[in-house]
Length: 554
Image (cartoon, rainbow, N blue to C red; front, side, top):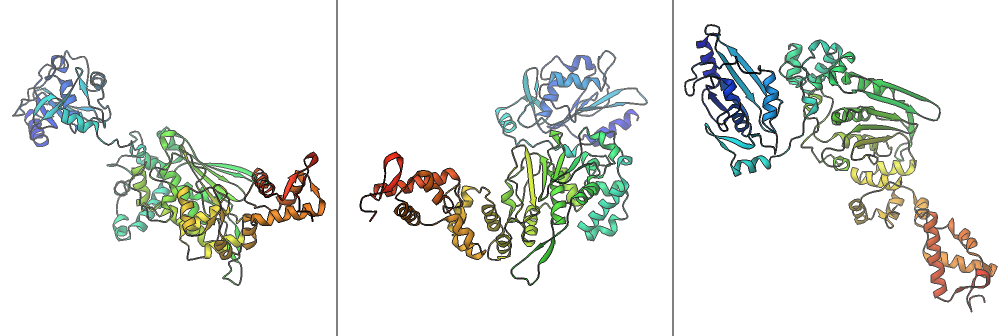
């Protein structure tokens, strides 16, 4: 463009100088780049970056934007290589978003540079000449304590791997079938926009669905819709592994993008046949699928959406004879899984915000916090044990969905009972399966008279036992009063006169509470013998035989 056209363009784009924009003549860029603190290019880089970022226009007159041009003849860097020099001379200056637009007037051959300066990173002020600078209006000054305090207290927003643009990828790298499926999902999510959406071009649709950005391919686009042969653009093992591990059979298969399609294919590999459940309120057994199809897909989509892709790991799905295990990299991003069981908690942030939004728009996931709740509800409605995340760690989320009932009567009675909320059903289900529960959960169940015993040997209460037809199991777990066991010892000594300790153990072991392990049973027998001895009812005779005390053998 001509000099006059360029001036008009600059005046339109940068109508005034302020904290985010400065105009500088700098006729000789070699002399103006670095050397005079407060007046050179790198000082302005620091000052503008320490605000909200902005632009430095070089080669124009202050106030009028008349084109004067800047001399690059003796400057040792071009607009690409100078970026590295800027980053090196300005500690903490972000390189992402730092670039230069170069204009050369067609009629006067004058050079103008527009340096795009990114905002400083959270809590990291940018230096130049070992000082920190800032803009106040159109002036450049050293960073004030107030501004530095604002910078140092900024919230650190995690980097969203899924939102990054893949510069070399094009729409030709996306799978046509996946795009059609994506449009179908979008129309289901937003039925009022369906007719309009079907008239959009692919580029327009994917931008509006927030899968791409301004017509550019993102990592999200490649994960959900990318062709398998285009995975190399991600520099990531974008794979989902399905493994079958049973006593009779072993198999495995790897699934690549487009995950929108291949998640469904992976689900299809999971052995899902009918099993029979016998609800007490039905005349005939209820045939149900071993796994709820919606829950399997929900679990897979959660792995895709919540995976910490910076860890460069696969998603692993392991099928056994009685469960399916889903594992993805990264811990729970907000709260714990049990916070979501009741369906009342709504997440406020996500690890992969861009990916989450795309999956939501394509009708793959829910963002209101109902996903986990629905998986638990589906399992309850099918009279099967609750899903669990107990094997999760600080580095991995692990979900196990059971496909087999351990105690049919207990499970069906528990799941049928409408007086118990879903969280309580989940906790009682864990108690029945000898799974640990938190102190807060134990307190809640005790207040409701639903459990008995001391941690870690918690058992269901008499009330729950009667509710679930487990009176016999309750008695076995709880055991009898101590007087019952003392009477057994006294009666046996009365009959046999003397007994070694191993015989007393044998007498009581099978009758002691099933919730106790062998060591605990031995300790309890120690306690019973001690009580009887203190009461004078028994004593230790010759050769360490236990015998009745004086007056007890009559």
